[in-house]
Amino acid sequence: MMRVWITCFLFLFGATELLQWFKQFSLPLPIFILGGVFLAIVSNYDKLTSLPSPPNYEEPEISESDVFPIQPAQTPQPANFKKKPLNSVSFEIRKPFRPGD
Image 1 (tube, rainbow, N blue to C red):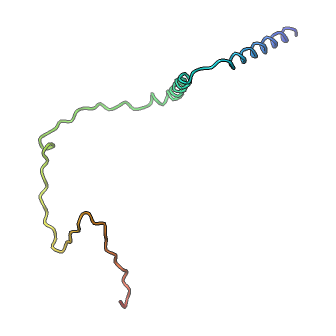
Image 2 (image 1 turned 90 degrees about the horizontal axis):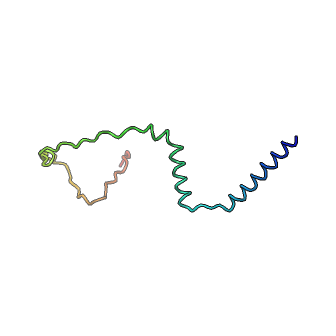
Image 3 (image 1 turned 90 degrees about the vertical axis):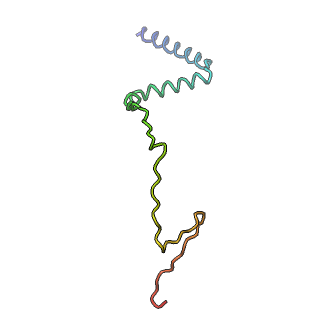
C-alpha cells in the first residue's frame, strides 16, 4: 500500500513541476502559425492524396484560320425592323387590351 502512496506522490509532484514549467514556457507567433499549418496538412492528408492528378496539357496547334477568322456574311434585315440606338435603355410600355377601348 505504501508503494501506491509513493507512486501517486511522485506522479503528482512531477505533474505540478511540469505544469509550472509550461506556464513559464512561451513560443513566438511564427512557431504557432507553422504548427497550425502542419496540423491542417496532416489532418487533411487523406483528402490531398485523393485529388485527381492534373491533366496533361498540350499546346494547341494554331492554324491560319484561327488567326484570321472568316467574317460571316451580312444577312439582310427585314423592312419592318426598327433599329434602336445601342446606348438606349428605354423600352415601350404596352397597356393591356380592354374591351371597349
